Length: 117
Image 1 (cartoon, rainbow, N blue to C red):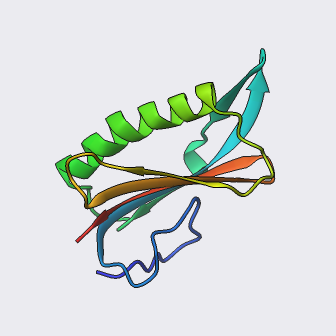
Image 2 (tube, rainbow, N blue to C red):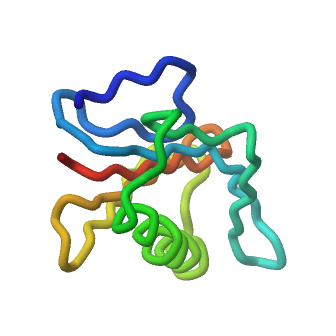
C-alpha cells in the first residue's frame, strides 16, 4: 500500500511512491543534559500507519531494538545540530525492507521508520 496517513504525520515520512507495509513517525525534543544530548518522546507526538493495524513482528522488533539503540547511540556519540537539518539513516543489516531515518530541525528530532512491501 502507498503511504497515505489520515491524520497529521509526526516524524520523517517514508519516501513517496514506496509501497510500504507499516510506518512509524515521532517528533522528539532534542535536549542537552549534562553535556550530552537526550531525546524526550511524548505519546501524542507519535504516528502509526496503518493506524488501525498492528505492525509485523519483524518491524516491531526493529523499532523496539535496533531503532531505539541507534537513536541512543546517535545522541550519545554524535553532536546533532538542533537546527542543522542533516539526515541520518539506518538500514537493517539483514532485512533490506526495514529502514529508519532522523532529521533535526527547530530543536526537534523528527524520526521515521518503515517496512517496505
